[in-house]
Length: 132
Image (cartoon, rainbow, N blue to C red; front, side, top):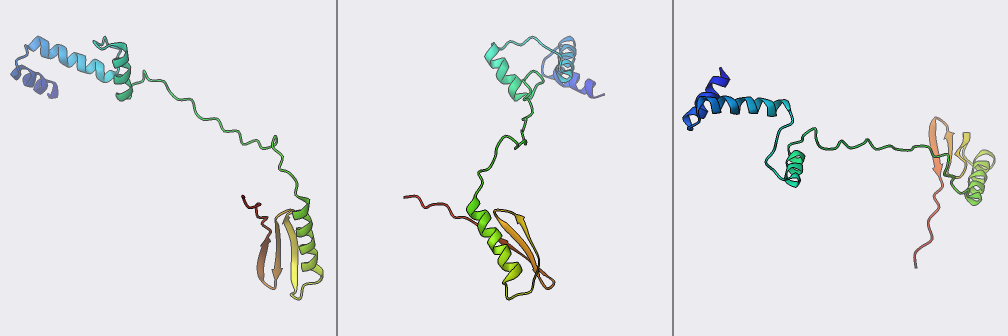
């Protein structure tokens, strides 16, 4: 039915029935994505395919991420490790608070401990040298 209406509409615009049927067949080929002869120069055809979201355009390869960090080693910071160890020792032995479960969770950065039922974390941050 829809095809008949399209043929009638094309005939009202001055097309013969054969031309309207040919146009309808060509439209079906385009809808199916069949390769067609184009009257465009190659550059224009390339642009048309790009904007038509055609299968002819190149598919991008998926980005490959490398999450392997075994090759990069972070430089050790003995000063920070010493400060964290000293703070942990202080919290365990000399603190006026009843600290429990003192644990160095990151040897150059973090200490976790409890006072009563409350958990705490102490994080050491080293500031960068100011730019001159």
